[in-house]
Amino acid sequence: MEQVNILIIGAGIIGLAVARELSKEFEDVVLVEAEGTFGRHTSSRNSEVLHSGIYYPKGSLKARLCVNGVRELYQYAKENNIPFRNCGKLIVANNKEELSILEELKNNGENNGVLGLQIINESECKKLEPQIMAKYAVKVPSTGIIDSHKLMQKLENEAENNGAFIVYDMKVISIDAFAEGYLINFSNGENFKAKIIINCAGLHSDKIAEMVGINIKREKLQLHWCKGEYYKSSKIKDINHLIYPVPDPNGIFLGIHLTINLQDEVRFGPNAYYVDELNYEMDESYKPEFLKAIKNYMKIDEENFHLDDCGIRAKLQKEGDSFRDFHIKEESEKGFPNFINCIGIESPGLTCCLTIAQEVRKLINN
Ligand SMILES: Cc1cc2nc3c(=O)[nH]c(=O)nc-3n(C[C@H](O)[C@H](O)[C@H](O)COP(=O)(O)OP(=O)(O)OC[C@H]3O[C@@H](n4cnc5c(N)ncnc54)[C@H](O)[C@@H]3O)c2cc1C
Image 1 (tube, rainbow, N blue to C red):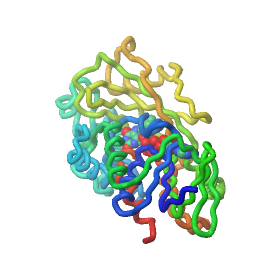
Image 2: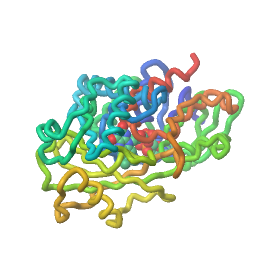
Image 3: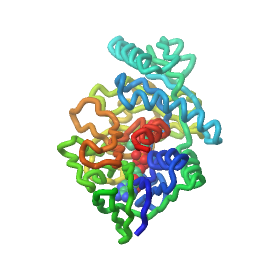
Image 4: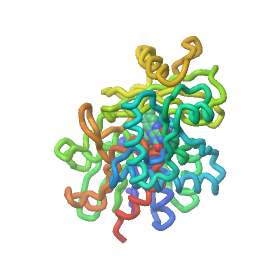
């Protein structure tokens, strides 16, 4: 039986960043992943946006880890030749009611430490983005985009160079707690003993917590999967900023927005609806909802508007709930010392990958 010091479960962006961070300092770090390679789920199915931290409540982990995370990721990308662009974003509004939401957002962002926020008027918007219809906008200079695949590749590479082992096709099926640590059983019949477990299993992180014996219902750690689909339009060119509407008042997503990627292709989405199965198939039933939302801020040619891709969010927030923060915790209080959960790592998880990893490091006792 393998005996390891730290076992990390899940090679999405979070598990990879945690493996890199911990392998700088600790020996015997192993990252196990159910799939044949990294990033086969949420980390490859997102908008690749580096968020500023404007949306999240002051004092929350999401606010703190995002504001610091975006800064650190730009620096990391620069130092490691990971393609990115600090393009900035506009959150657009078309009436006075929405303007007051923009003002609240700007105040919230400033309280969180987001720099350079500015409310601009219609003519200033037109100058920046001639194709966008907006009476007002908040200009958010720190937002950007990144090549998330190259980022994951670099994190994997650094973790391995630091001495971490990354093992693919290793699906955790059960975990037993015992006095000196944990026994982890895999679907291929192998098992490992580990002193410390870091649960970075994304959409299944609640199930991993349940495997060790945490009552996820009682602890309100059950995940609610929330699908988001994207459409693309090959005809729209020359957009320089990401364009967001004022956020959804129910707080489950940021509204159907426009993003560009590093090849200057335009995508719209994601929308948001709760699902029970892990199924990345798509149909066009939400297309009218997309078109209606987009027409509030730009003219769109319906003929050149096609389904693109989708992702599924690992939300702690179920329908009707208010804000839920990331759950990043060492679970001694629940009777599981040295078991660290990262649950509910929805957006802005990509932006926060380096700072989440640092947060995990702080939870490990030397
Ligand atoms: C539609 C959408 C848009 C988003 N847009 C953005 C954005 O623009 N900016 C941003 O900052 N964030 C964004 N996010 C959030 C971001 O993508 C996530 O926070 C991040 O990718 C989560 O990474 P993860 O490593 O926790 O999960 P994942 O990438 O899902 O990785 C978890 C891994 O655990 C593995 N695993 C699961 N169970 C087991 C098991 N039993 N044994 C072994 N391995 C297991 C899985 O196979 C998987 O590889 C978006 C998310 C979605 C869904």
